[in-house]
Length: 508
Image 1 (cartoon, one colour):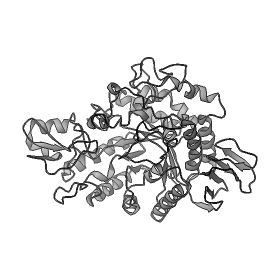
Image 2 (image 1 turned 180 degrees about the vertical axis):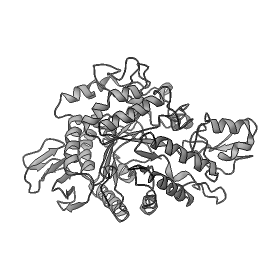
Image 3 (image 1 turned 90 degrees about the vertical axis):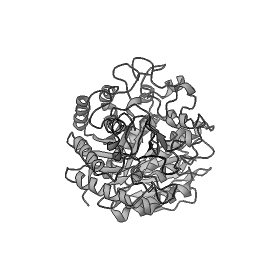
Image 4 (image 1 turned 60 degrees about the vertical axis):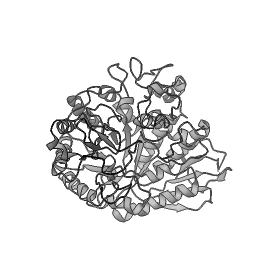
């Protein structure tokens, strides 16, 4: 298989609302992103993935899309989006955008038309009464009633009505959307909730909307469309513990790659992380699909906080929001985890602020929380706002260079120690660790394979084709480094020729 840009790419995830504010209204936007493009390029990124930037009532942070052919006015204009794509390309950065095929927005023209004219309702799932007792993934019932008495399905928030993928109009609409953005130079599509499009109302299965056979033909048609363009890719958001089901989305005629949530969810444990890595490689290698390695994103607790808890694994059903965390321990582990993830074969995704070591923000006043997980749970689940707090760029107090005024979500005052400005001046900072690691990765790592080294049960070690060796010590005691020529990079200080606990190194 010929080498392609995405097989070993370093991809930076931008949550646009919280990245950089260019017009001073407290919300991140395209003007802010465009001004900060040199930062992303200097970091060493090959691509940017943006969460939804379309017009939306923001019932779910933009994942309730009202119009795929425009940009949310808080973020800018379609012209600015086109200029951003061109400017990113000029810096050698590819652009990946989100597409949300499972559901729409109640504000979309299609849904508003369905409310006005019941004959137009077969683009969604309407019924005279709820067809089953499915629960919303965000909590509460998955059916809501409209004024004339009918009910519609929403697997997520009531503001997100599910599309009916048995209707050919829905297929054609998304083909047109893909072409709209591919024609504007977008390099990749990240497919949200990719496995949920099919619906089985008759089988009595409470999970009768996950991974039904018909979803695969949908993505085969998307792949045929993408292949009409040069080097355009499809990336699936597919959450499965069952690797055989996961692999079915990576067949050569479907998606190019998919997010590796098994690795993200694994605890800070040598044996379990190695098992996750081996399982990932075993799944991907026969299919010729490159793995992806992800430590955090806009939906999960930030890795510094997660790795400082007594229980370091991740589970959406048990988010552990507000659970105490030893942030100093989490910081050390997350530095080591960064070197581990970047050394593995495949592509790496970095969520904005991960390179700064930002922790989860738990102390958000209830009245400022916006995640529907919070409201739908009656406030029992704080939700995802804590990993979406705006980036700190510079200065001694909020808004830390994010923009000119108050931010849409408050920043902690102690983030003055974590700003880009502060970390650029500190050679030992998390930011400079990422910059150095990504520069080395570009030269020595990326796509390929690995060879395991046996250095004991508490040490994870492997060598890549370039000769670079990665060693991570998960145990409580220092361990002796293997024979090597020189040290390229360490996540923490070494003890002579010994590798301390919670520390990783790259050797050649």
